[in-house]
Length: 459
Ligand code: ADP
Ligand code: MG
Image 1: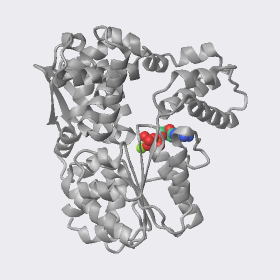
Image 2: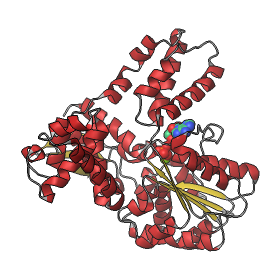
Image 3: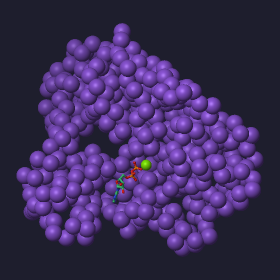
């Protein structure tokens, strides 16, 4: 495989796992070779090798396959670049700020030293643009940020990548601290929670760990889906959670899906998470994207007063870049950087030229045929059965999934889709689409299948 292919796959993984995970776990991987269907990677430590193969192997494989790399398995081998070290391997893999926070959490340090993950100063309520898709989440976050008696506990925010969950959580933390500088607010990702827990176990500092987590006023755990399937971490999380709720302390949790949809999360935790207020961030719509672009462009303009947008450029971007807000922001940032370098007005031509790759990526047209092929591969049925007459469930269900994805990912109308599925009626397509919509909310396997297929098709 060519190196640039791995480069591209890494880029997709960055999108898929987020900056933190990417920096910690993906970036250090080196692809050595692809041989007999096995992609061989070298990693710096055995801790990493374990971790990555347990937590990221599937995703890596999926993205490799999506880029047509002939791999059906991944393998991670430790290759020590420097002379062997005695230092705990975990410390190597951990983000720097965690290591230092942990290093100081010895008994003589007061509990006051909260090892909160750093908050992004830009993630405030002022900088959050409210639209239909996020107004409920925003209102709930605002309410919790006001402090006072705890009304809903926990506040559970969920939604897809880049829709503003982390932004809202940081905004709550800023707000609470501003109103009450003494408030002990602990914000961290579920992964960091686990990491601290493992470290405390290893260093026999569980008492300190428990004391620390039970001493906060507000606990925020981001991306909680991460602890699914990790039994002892879940157990500890559950106890921490209960202890804080009993003390009337506020808890705020985020995840990429609703509590009930998180696979391998203990039922008692699911039901605990559902006890408070559960709100979701919907995918952005055109108005929200435009609003975000206008607000951000306004901010940039205070830095580069000379720069102006030609008529229609922002509308064009809001229309064309629909993936997530992070991508939208990246596009705008690039435009400003470019325009400030060349000192030109930001015209439509400039935008198209400078953002060609982003536009092309979001432009990728998926075809119904491609969807049928992917879906039949996924469910191991024959492609011809997609358009054939069979009605047994093992065939009919995948067919409905393909119809659903065709509706979602292409601009084809229901009758057009029906024609491509062996001349079926548009009502049949509509029924299929509805069925899959329903199933996704009740059947987590279906949810996962559809998500995976969607990502593979869009990737
Ligand atoms: P998530 O945690 O849901 O994956 P983030 O909170 O990290 O997403 O948001 C991704 C980026 O998009 C951040 O830079 C954030 O500031 C920005 N963003 C998302 N939604 C909004 C919004 N409604 N208004 C302004 N910026 C937003
Ligand atoms: Mg986030």
